[in-house]
Length: 228
Image (cartoon, rainbow, N blue to C red; front, side, top):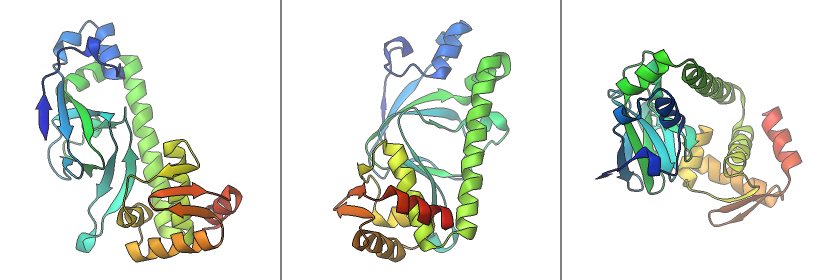
């Protein structure tokens, strides 16, 4: 982890909702943001530790995951630039209920959580934006629970591939996660993840070239995902 002094939000390329709201309220001088750079695999936040800052991911990819039994983790989300980390504290959860670690070199911005709470309680538009973001996160987790409970191996991997395709905005993408992490994203073992990928490749559903995956037959992939 490397802390970098940040001169001003005014010069930052990421004009986040936090800055825009604070500027609207004349409170931008209270933000005191810190830039923190995390190396690949470095922990950004840890499960069950206190939330002290809202963290904005400015550059890079990170994974949000929960620790399971016997070291078996479940990846909830892949975080992209502009994603927030730690805002659950605004809703009365003082500790992180998940871990976040860097998948690539990550540049982040940290703002004291008490400042965020002040904006939340005194700005209606910001309150609505955070509530909507929180609702979307809860909805995604509910969807994940259904998948864990009801889908078979092929359905889980199909769901993960469609999710990654939407995340990267292309049917051809290079994975920033390992095969093991793809298994954790699908809540299955690494061996099963590799086996299903090989099946999909042999069936002409996807193309595989190292870390590059191409979704060749989206119709069939969606059908596998839907049926489960």
